[in-house]
Image 1 (tube, rainbow over the protein chains, first blue to last red):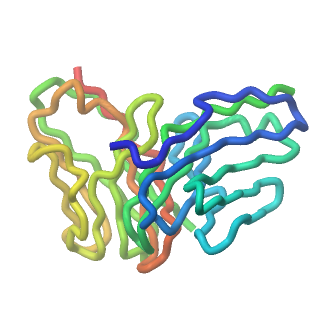
Image 2: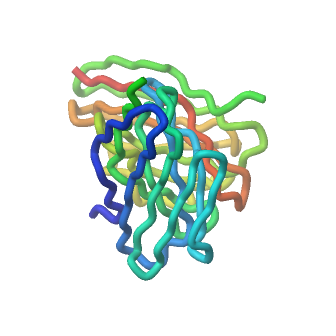
Image 3: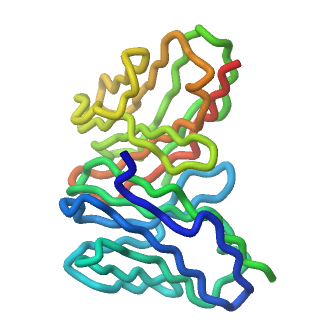
Length: 112
Length: 113
């Protein structure tokens, strides 16, 4: 059962552009929504996370937008750089310390 | 400080064999998680330990999979009678008690021939 759906599957942007990745969830009991970045041969690393009591969170060039009524959240990468080329996963969990349910991933390529 | 480490980094085995995968969490982290990641997919939850006990093992696919964490630190994922469909990257993560952030290791790439 796929509880977190992610799109697009792949994304190509030019250096300096904005990368946008979207996720939708089904279970309204989810209350923690992180984004992870994964480079080839490495484990996922936390990028940024949000809880449903806020609609937006920004950390540097990375912003999460959260729409609780639509059960959707998105990652925006401003001024995308070639070093941002990686696979990005959205995820969700029910409470502190519980399992993460991941989306299918988005392979981002930022061209120089 | 040291992150989550996993050994071996790669494991090739034959169908039907038994394998053990090891995870060393970040020192002091009480929570430990195992996930499995198939090629081109997101990680899928297998089991979660809080201390020495399995708090949630609902992600284990069948009784060929078993995990232990006898002293509340290092964990071992054990797979009996391996099948080709078990081929994947097995990821371990840890977090401090009650914290949301899970820190992942580099994974063990298991290939069952």
